Image 1 (spheres, rainbow, N blue to C red):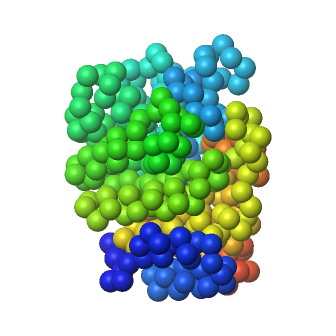
Image 2 (cartoon, rainbow, N blue to C red; image 1 turned 120 degrees about the vertical axis):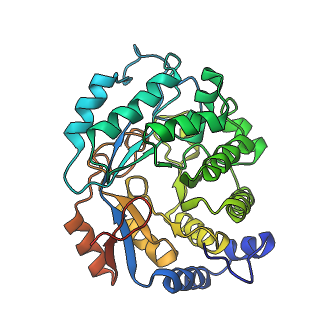
Length: 350
């Protein structure tokens, strides 16, 4: 865990965020270059999204459905998850990413059984990264177990790491506008703090480009930095751009590519103690994700295998997200970078 001796604080970060783009890029790239040189990390992975039927009604979400009868809804039982998992797995894959919704009729045993099933089906070198903080808190509420008990039982079933979803934006006023019935910022941080205490690493995120302002983003980053100072458990930070299709915030449109790149750069400068900044290509598109490497990002996530609908349903550029390793190698080479394959814990794979 690297931490700068002279940290950027709130006012400095705000000035850089709105300042000269060339200087911002230069500072962020220098920080990235000092850590990783010209390397772009990636892994071979696929997603399982058990359901999109959800009790929460986030205004930015294009993915959720109210019930299984609603058009576009799905819910997978354990047999369907087994078939899907075997269909998507390819030799060389090192991670399965499981995240979906808070289904009104699924209990903790169901979610734990998914982990056990996947652990039984896939080779031991495939890490299981599963369940957002939102889902973990709901498991705690519905089961009557505390967070530590939930996470211990999931870990015993085969859970290796947590994804970062559900952070959205920490500011309470903005959060009450876009996801009033979802777990609070404090609870999000507590889920991850508890996971880190148990030796479960995680990612962290922000959802930006909706009704929040830059100062809300900076405050969000600094809250993550503070938790990382305490636990050291975050592996990567993923800035997630709001996508406007098919949700109740659609009228506000989307932020520009420049704003995306500024946000990635300021994330690299603010989060001096979180090792990796991820440009999530199914959301940003391959071209912008590659450009983000010049602004402080160092990771492009994984091959995905056309296994996620969360951003395609919101109108993202990548409607059938698949990234072939040779395609990534060629894209990186043209831009002066080289790719290195990693596992979920950033151990390099030859």
